[in-house]
Image (tube, rainbow, N blue to C red; front, side):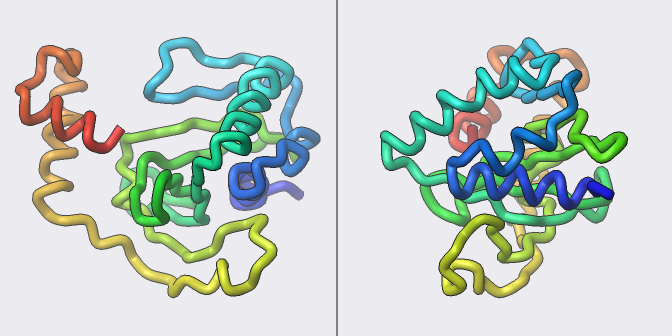
Length: 179
């Protein structure tokens, strides 16, 4: 039985190894992928494979490093997630949530809200072969209180219908520094 955690582990292994084979067979034909940074939702397995394959290849050829770490949310949307980082393991940029039906992954959502800083990180990076790479201590991620307050103000502004361009220069800078 494929659980959300298993689905997210497969996604994390794909991102950590840059190998689509970790997830391709687990996707439902009517799979959906959404990102809070992209307007259009991907609405099929094949469209997602066509979308993610060049991204993985680009990461391989550029030498750019991403980290996909197993984590969990305790408050906003309780349950497993994957925390994504880029550039360094602690430069958290997003988190990924999954939906599973009938032993297939039916959707993945790339999110900035809830914040990746609100997730409890595990130190586990599926797909890494070197045991040393996987031995980061399990730890809660202690985001600065001011950063969490700023994030909450940002989400509130979004909920009131403000676009990023309509927000204060300080809020725009906060967003751009993270995403």
